[in-house]
Length: 286
Image (cartoon, rainbow, N blue to C red; front, side):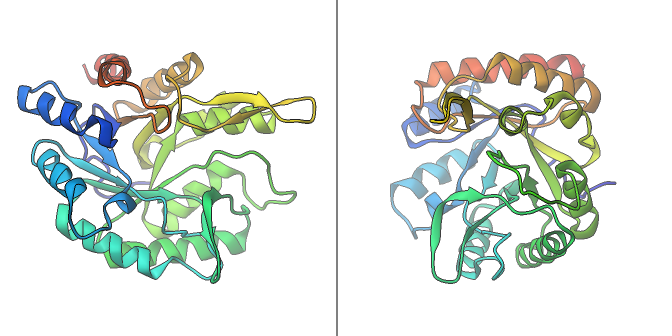
């Protein structure tokens, strides 16, 4: 199994770019001390102009960009959101990002939009539909994309595939690659009562083009138990770092993104997380 153009990003750590860090990243880039690359949610830049584009244009001149889409709703029964796809295609034309990704999920019906990335069933029919829609996206963008494994809170009662085999078959059929979110593996394993180690070990490194790590919260579920919430609102957890190190020993270096989307810290705290990821990447890159 192989996917074209998996290594368009530097094999270093990057950050999810947030507006509070625009000036910090640009100043550090001019000094040569910024993260090796940055990732943005393209939906935040669908407007025609204004300050967000001025900042992003300046940063893109210094560092490679990755577009991590949250709005295509590839798994929707009605198919990918055409307006979102056209807006994404236009933004790709404007910035030529090194990588584009979205999620193994859906988030709209013909009449409603939901502010979440909702899971799809791992059935033969869902796989055929999702592969067709990924193909539609890739044909419009003129490039292979990455699809991220989801964070799950419940599992469907019946499935034809386990998650990793479903994702591998999706890559085989559509030509896409995988964005391996290690925090999502940890969150899903906690919520579904599974061991994350064999789950992580099942991922084929040949199709993994990017890795995400993040923090999550564990909260009372209101029924006498606890649930892991994928909130990206804290430092990367110890277990997530350990799982990343485990995968990198087997796979070799990959672009690693530190996600911190809520309760975002100051720039120095975020870069401390980047330094920790780069330290894990250095031995496998030696």
